[in-house]
Image (cartoon, rainbow, N blue to C red; front, top):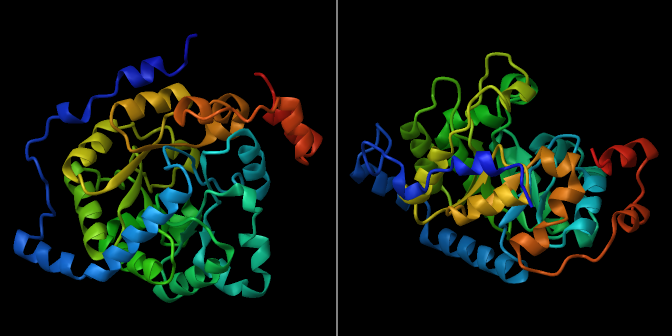
Amino acid sequence: MKFSGYTLISSFTPFHCIPLKKPRRLPLDINFKTASKIRRLSTYNQKQQNHCKAEMVVAKYPPPLFSVAPMMEWTDVHYRTLARLISKHAWLYTEMLAAETIVYQEANLDRFLAFPPEQHPIVLQIGGNNLDNIAKATKLANAYNYDEINFNCGCPSPRVAGHGCFGVRLMLDPKFVGEAMSVIAANTDVPVSVKCRIGVDDHDSYNELCDFIYKVSALSPTRHFIIHSRKALLNGISPADNRKIPPLKYEYYFALLRDFPDLKFTINGGINCVDEANAALKAGAHGVMVGRAAYHNPWNVLGHVDTAIYGAPASGLTRRQVQSLIFFPLHVSDSVYSDD
Protein backbone atom coordinates (compact mmCIF):
# COMPACT_ATOMS: atom_id res chain seq x y z
CA MET A 1 0.00 0.00 0.00
CA LYS A 2 1.37 3.42 -0.97
CA PHE A 3 1.12 6.25 1.50
CA SER A 4 0.98 9.96 0.75
CA GLY A 5 3.47 10.92 3.45
CA TYR A 6 6.52 9.12 2.06
CA THR A 7 8.14 12.21 0.56
CA LEU A 8 7.58 14.31 3.66
CA ILE A 9 8.81 11.76 6.14
CA SER A 10 11.79 10.75 4.06
CA SER A 11 13.07 14.28 4.73
CA PHE A 12 13.08 13.75 8.50
CA THR A 13 16.59 14.08 9.87
CA PRO A 14 17.31 11.83 12.85
CA PHE A 15 17.77 14.07 15.85
CA HIS A 16 21.24 12.74 16.58
CA CYS A 17 22.41 13.89 13.13
CA ILE A 18 21.30 17.53 13.34
CA PRO A 19 24.37 19.79 13.37
CA LEU A 20 24.45 22.60 15.91
CA LYS A 21 27.35 24.92 16.56
CA LYS A 22 26.83 24.68 20.31
CA PRO A 23 25.48 21.52 21.95
CA ARG A 24 23.32 23.10 24.68
CA ARG A 25 22.18 26.59 23.79
CA LEU A 26 21.09 28.38 26.92
CA PRO A 27 19.52 31.83 26.98
CA LEU A 28 21.88 34.63 26.07
CA ASP A 29 21.05 36.56 29.23
CA ILE A 30 21.32 33.70 31.70
CA ASN A 31 24.55 32.15 32.93
CA PHE A 32 24.61 28.79 34.65
CA LYS A 33 24.58 30.28 38.15
CA THR A 34 21.50 32.40 37.41
CA ALA A 35 19.85 29.48 35.66
CA SER A 36 20.27 27.37 38.76
CA LYS A 37 18.54 30.04 40.82
CA ILE A 38 15.66 30.16 38.36
CA ARG A 39 15.27 26.40 38.49
CA ARG A 40 14.94 26.57 42.27
CA LEU A 41 11.92 28.83 41.87
CA SER A 42 10.03 25.73 40.76
CA THR A 43 9.87 23.95 44.09
CA TYR A 44 10.66 20.31 44.63
CA ASN A 45 7.18 19.59 45.92
CA GLN A 46 5.54 21.18 42.90
CA LYS A 47 7.63 19.09 40.54
CA GLN A 48 6.93 15.92 42.48
CA GLN A 49 3.21 16.62 42.48
CA ASN A 50 3.19 17.21 38.73
CA HIS A 51 5.19 14.03 38.16
CA CYS A 52 2.64 12.07 40.18
CA LYS A 53 -0.21 13.66 38.22
CA ALA A 54 1.39 12.61 34.94
CA GLU A 55 1.97 9.05 36.16
CA MET A 56 -1.65 8.73 37.28
CA VAL A 57 -3.00 9.86 33.89
CA VAL A 58 -0.59 7.64 31.95
CA ALA A 59 -1.58 4.69 34.11
CA LYS A 60 -5.25 5.35 33.40
CA TYR A 61 -4.95 5.86 29.64
CA PRO A 62 -2.46 4.99 26.89
CA PRO A 63 0.23 7.67 26.41
CA PRO A 64 -0.44 10.54 23.99
CA LEU A 65 1.41 8.99 21.06
CA PHE A 66 -1.28 10.44 18.77
CA SER A 67 -3.47 13.45 19.45
CA VAL A 68 -5.90 15.62 17.51
CA ALA A 69 -4.95 19.29 17.58
CA PRO A 70 -7.17 21.93 19.17
CA MET A 71 -8.91 23.84 16.36
CA MET A 72 -11.21 26.81 16.83
CA GLU A 73 -14.81 26.08 15.80
CA TRP A 74 -13.81 22.57 14.75
CA THR A 75 -12.84 20.38 17.70
CA ASP A 76 -16.09 21.00 19.54
CA VAL A 77 -18.00 18.37 21.52
CA HIS A 78 -19.76 17.09 18.38
CA TYR A 79 -16.59 16.48 16.40
CA ARG A 80 -14.94 14.88 19.43
CA THR A 81 -17.87 12.48 19.75
CA LEU A 82 -17.32 11.42 16.15
CA ALA A 83 -13.56 11.13 16.69
CA ARG A 84 -13.98 8.95 19.77
CA LEU A 85 -16.32 6.57 17.97
CA ILE A 86 -13.60 6.03 15.37
CA SER A 87 -10.58 5.91 17.71
CA LYS A 88 -10.67 4.82 21.34
CA HIS A 89 -7.06 5.81 22.10
CA ALA A 90 -6.28 9.09 20.31
CA TRP A 91 -5.99 12.01 22.71
CA LEU A 92 -8.56 14.71 21.97
CA TYR A 93 -8.26 18.45 22.59
CA THR A 94 -10.98 21.04 23.04
CA GLU A 95 -11.11 24.24 21.05
CA MET A 96 -9.06 26.94 22.72
CA LEU A 97 -11.10 28.66 25.41
CA ALA A 98 -10.06 32.09 26.63
CA ALA A 99 -9.68 32.19 30.40
CA GLU A 100 -11.97 35.23 30.45
CA THR A 101 -14.73 33.27 28.73
CA ILE A 102 -14.64 30.63 31.43
CA VAL A 103 -14.57 33.20 34.23
CA TYR A 104 -17.31 35.43 32.85
CA GLN A 105 -19.52 32.50 31.90
CA GLU A 106 -19.36 30.84 35.31
CA ALA A 107 -23.16 30.51 35.39
CA ASN A 108 -23.15 28.81 32.00
CA LEU A 109 -20.08 26.59 32.13
CA ASP A 110 -21.70 23.43 30.80
CA ARG A 111 -22.06 25.13 27.43
CA PHE A 112 -18.29 25.54 27.21
CA LEU A 113 -16.77 22.75 29.31
CA ALA A 114 -19.16 19.80 29.53
CA PHE A 115 -18.41 16.66 27.53
CA PRO A 116 -19.50 13.00 27.54
CA PRO A 117 -17.29 10.73 29.68
CA GLU A 118 -16.57 8.60 26.61
CA GLN A 119 -14.36 11.40 25.26
CA HIS A 120 -11.53 10.65 27.72
CA PRO A 121 -8.60 11.06 27.37
CA ILE A 122 -9.28 14.72 26.67
CA VAL A 123 -7.24 17.92 27.13
CA LEU A 124 -8.63 21.38 27.82
CA GLN A 125 -6.74 24.14 26.07
CA ILE A 126 -6.99 27.61 27.55
CA GLY A 127 -5.52 30.93 26.51
CA GLY A 128 -5.05 34.28 28.16
CA ASN A 129 -2.66 36.88 29.53
CA ASN A 130 -4.17 37.63 32.94
CA LEU A 131 -2.82 35.44 35.74
CA ASP A 132 -5.85 35.93 38.01
CA ASN A 133 -8.28 34.89 35.28
CA ILE A 134 -6.07 31.97 34.29
CA ALA A 135 -6.11 30.76 37.91
CA LYS A 136 -9.88 31.19 38.22
CA ALA A 137 -10.54 29.46 34.89
CA THR A 138 -8.39 26.50 35.89
CA LYS A 139 -10.23 26.14 39.20
CA LEU A 140 -13.61 26.29 37.48
CA ALA A 141 -12.55 23.64 34.96
CA ASN A 142 -11.59 21.16 37.70
CA ALA A 143 -15.20 20.08 38.14
CA TYR A 144 -15.24 18.73 34.58
CA ASN A 145 -12.39 16.26 35.08
CA TYR A 146 -10.21 16.96 32.07
CA ASP A 147 -7.11 14.79 31.83
CA GLU A 148 -4.67 17.63 31.15
CA ILE A 149 -4.65 21.42 30.91
CA ASN A 150 -2.81 22.90 27.92
CA PHE A 151 -1.82 26.55 27.57
CA ASN A 152 -1.99 28.13 24.12
CA CYS A 153 1.23 29.84 23.04
CA GLY A 154 0.86 29.07 19.36
CA CYS A 155 -2.25 30.70 17.90
CA PRO A 156 -1.28 33.42 15.35
CA SER A 157 -4.82 34.71 14.77
CA PRO A 158 -4.99 38.54 14.78
CA ARG A 159 -7.89 38.31 17.25
CA VAL A 160 -5.72 36.30 19.64
CA ALA A 161 -2.09 37.26 19.08
CA GLY A 162 -2.98 40.77 17.91
CA HIS A 163 -5.82 42.46 19.74
CA GLY A 164 -5.92 39.74 22.42
CA CYS A 165 -2.17 39.87 23.11
CA PHE A 166 -1.92 36.17 23.89
CA GLY A 167 -1.49 32.99 21.86
CA VAL A 168 1.81 32.86 20.00
CA ARG A 169 2.72 36.40 21.08
CA LEU A 170 3.40 34.97 24.53
CA MET A 171 6.45 33.20 23.15
CA LEU A 172 8.11 36.60 23.36
CA ASP A 173 7.58 36.58 27.13
CA PRO A 174 8.70 33.18 28.46
CA LYS A 175 8.85 34.50 32.02
CA PHE A 176 5.12 35.22 31.94
CA VAL A 177 4.41 31.80 30.40
CA GLY A 178 6.39 30.17 33.20
CA GLU A 179 4.35 32.09 35.76
CA ALA A 180 1.10 31.19 34.00
CA MET A 181 2.02 27.51 33.94
CA SER A 182 2.85 27.60 37.65
CA VAL A 183 -0.55 29.19 38.32
CA ILE A 184 -2.32 26.54 36.24
CA ALA A 185 -0.43 23.69 37.91
CA ALA A 186 -1.18 25.09 41.37
CA ASN A 187 -4.90 25.10 40.66
CA THR A 188 -5.40 21.69 39.07
CA ASP A 189 -4.79 18.04 39.92
CA VAL A 190 -3.88 17.00 36.36
CA PRO A 191 -0.72 17.46 34.27
CA VAL A 192 -0.08 20.70 32.39
CA SER A 193 1.46 21.36 28.98
CA VAL A 194 2.25 24.14 26.51
CA LYS A 195 1.51 24.27 22.78
CA CYS A 196 3.77 26.66 20.90
CA ARG A 197 5.50 27.34 17.60
CA ILE A 198 9.25 27.35 16.96
CA GLY A 199 9.40 31.14 16.87
CA VAL A 200 7.72 34.45 16.10
CA ASP A 201 8.62 36.79 13.22
CA ASP A 202 12.38 37.45 13.39
CA HIS A 203 12.64 35.75 16.79
CA ASP A 204 13.05 32.39 15.09
CA SER A 205 16.50 31.05 15.92
CA TYR A 206 16.97 27.72 17.61
CA ASN A 207 18.71 29.56 20.42
CA GLU A 208 15.59 31.63 21.09
CA LEU A 209 13.39 28.53 21.04
CA CYS A 210 15.69 26.95 23.63
CA ASP A 211 15.44 30.11 25.69
CA PHE A 212 11.64 29.78 25.72
CA ILE A 213 11.62 26.07 26.57
CA TYR A 214 14.30 26.44 29.22
CA LYS A 215 12.70 29.37 31.04
CA VAL A 216 9.18 27.90 31.01
CA SER A 217 10.35 24.52 32.29
CA ALA A 218 12.61 26.18 34.87
CA LEU A 219 9.91 28.47 36.25
CA SER A 220 7.11 25.88 36.31
CA PRO A 221 6.45 22.15 36.52
CA THR A 222 5.76 22.01 32.77
CA ARG A 223 7.34 18.88 31.32
CA HIS A 224 5.38 18.50 28.07
CA PHE A 225 5.55 20.82 25.06
CA ILE A 226 3.63 20.43 21.79
CA ILE A 227 5.79 21.99 19.08
CA HIS A 228 4.24 23.25 15.85
CA SER A 229 7.35 23.08 13.69
CA ARG A 230 6.77 26.41 11.94
CA LYS A 231 7.30 29.93 13.17
CA ALA A 232 4.40 32.39 13.22
CA LEU A 233 4.27 35.61 11.24
CA LEU A 234 2.39 38.43 12.94
CA ASN A 235 2.45 40.86 10.04
CA GLY A 236 -1.24 40.57 9.25
CA ILE A 237 -1.31 37.34 7.26
CA SER A 238 -4.20 34.98 7.90
CA PRO A 239 -4.04 31.92 10.18
CA ALA A 240 -4.38 29.78 7.03
CA ASP A 241 -1.30 31.40 5.49
CA ASN A 242 0.51 30.93 8.80
CA ARG A 243 0.03 27.20 8.25
CA LYS A 244 1.54 27.37 4.75
CA ILE A 245 4.02 30.22 4.29
CA PRO A 246 6.51 29.67 7.15
CA PRO A 247 8.57 26.58 6.29
CA LEU A 248 8.51 23.49 8.44
CA LYS A 249 11.70 23.01 10.42
CA TYR A 250 11.53 19.54 11.89
CA GLU A 251 15.23 19.79 12.73
CA TYR A 252 14.33 22.22 15.53
CA TYR A 253 11.95 19.67 17.04
CA PHE A 254 14.43 16.79 16.95
CA ALA A 255 17.17 19.00 18.35
CA LEU A 256 14.93 19.74 21.34
CA LEU A 257 14.70 16.01 22.02
CA ARG A 258 18.46 15.89 22.26
CA ASP A 259 18.99 19.10 24.21
CA PHE A 260 16.18 18.68 26.75
CA PRO A 261 16.19 14.95 27.56
CA ASP A 262 14.19 15.48 30.75
CA LEU A 263 11.19 16.90 28.85
CA LYS A 264 8.53 15.41 26.57
CA PHE A 265 7.84 16.88 23.14
CA THR A 266 4.98 16.22 20.73
CA ILE A 267 5.55 17.13 17.08
CA ASN A 268 2.89 19.04 15.13
CA GLY A 269 2.67 20.52 11.65
CA GLY A 270 2.62 18.96 8.18
CA ILE A 271 1.82 15.42 9.34
CA ASN A 272 -1.33 14.24 7.60
CA CYS A 273 -1.72 10.49 8.01
CA VAL A 274 -0.97 7.64 10.39
CA ASP A 275 2.00 6.46 8.35
CA GLU A 276 3.65 9.85 8.63
CA ALA A 277 2.89 9.80 12.35
CA ASN A 278 4.49 6.36 12.72
CA ALA A 279 7.56 7.52 10.79
CA ALA A 280 7.95 10.46 13.19
CA LEU A 281 7.59 8.16 16.20
CA LYS A 282 10.18 5.79 14.78
CA ALA A 283 12.51 8.77 14.27
CA GLY A 284 12.27 9.44 18.01
CA ALA A 285 9.26 11.73 18.48
CA HIS A 286 7.58 11.30 21.87
CA GLY A 287 4.15 11.96 20.35
CA VAL A 288 2.48 13.25 17.19
CA MET A 289 -0.35 15.77 16.85
CA VAL A 290 -2.46 15.94 13.68
CA GLY A 291 -4.86 18.78 12.92
CA ARG A 292 -6.95 19.42 9.85
CA ALA A 293 -6.32 16.04 8.24
CA ALA A 294 -8.03 14.40 11.23
CA TYR A 295 -11.00 16.73 10.76
CA HIS A 296 -11.38 16.63 6.99
CA ASN A 297 -10.79 12.89 6.69
CA PRO A 298 -11.50 11.37 10.12
CA TRP A 299 -12.18 7.85 8.90
CA ASN A 300 -8.94 7.43 6.95
CA VAL A 301 -6.82 9.12 9.64
CA LEU A 302 -8.37 8.21 12.99
CA GLY A 303 -9.60 4.86 11.71
CA HIS A 304 -6.01 3.54 11.74
CA VAL A 305 -4.74 5.10 14.97
CA ASP A 306 -5.73 2.34 17.39
CA THR A 307 -4.24 -0.48 15.32
CA ALA A 308 -1.23 1.19 13.71
CA ILE A 309 -0.12 3.50 16.56
CA TYR A 310 -1.30 1.70 19.71
CA GLY A 311 -1.38 -1.90 18.53
CA ALA A 312 -4.94 -2.25 19.81
CA PRO A 313 -7.97 -3.79 18.11
CA ALA A 314 -10.01 -1.57 15.79
CA SER A 315 -13.40 -0.36 16.99
CA GLY A 316 -15.13 -2.79 14.63
CA LEU A 317 -17.60 -0.13 13.53
CA THR A 318 -18.25 0.61 9.88
CA ARG A 319 -18.59 4.15 8.57
CA ARG A 320 -22.33 3.74 8.27
CA GLN A 321 -22.56 2.47 11.83
CA VAL A 322 -20.57 5.44 13.10
CA GLN A 323 -22.77 7.78 11.12
CA SER A 324 -25.88 6.24 12.58
CA LEU A 325 -24.56 6.68 16.14
CA ILE A 326 -24.01 10.39 15.93
CA PHE A 327 -26.27 13.26 15.00
CA PHE A 328 -24.82 15.32 12.18
CA PRO A 329 -26.69 17.63 9.79
CA LEU A 330 -26.83 16.03 6.34
CA HIS A 331 -24.51 18.56 4.68
CA VAL A 332 -21.88 18.01 7.38
CA SER A 333 -22.00 14.22 7.27
CA ASP A 334 -21.78 14.21 3.47
CA SER A 335 -18.66 16.34 3.69
CA VAL A 336 -17.01 14.51 6.55
CA TYR A 337 -17.59 11.05 5.17
CA SER A 338 -16.77 11.83 1.55
CA ASP A 339 -14.30 9.45 -0.07
CA ASP A 340 -12.70 12.37 -1.96
